[in-house]
Image (tube, rainbow, N blue to C red; front, side, top):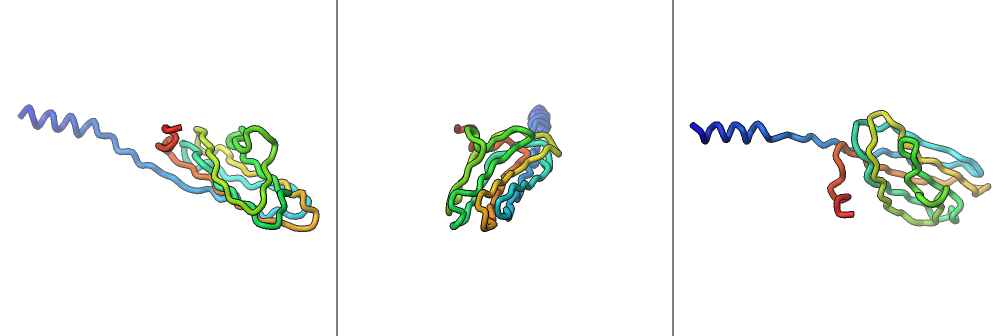
Length: 135
């Protein structure tokens, strides 16, 4: 009988965690010589973990991007904007974020002749990213 009680105690201590996760698409076609922004609300209490940003060939380092999470600029950390050419990068964006807070990508196109599609994808989750514990 004591064994059954211990088993019941063990079962009572098991906590089921239902992790939710999604990717917020903040991509934008930025018109010539203009600024734009795309935003989304955090769908649940949780964490931002990473972003993938892609600049197309032909933008010649003229389209700047920055990512702001709940009022704090997380990318780039040491400059106002990052503008690259024909590259896709992944960046770490670790921040605890409450539900319904704003996650925003801002864009600045200094190319006066052409619009450019800039892809920005931000990963969010209800759980702290396991890989971040290794940092």
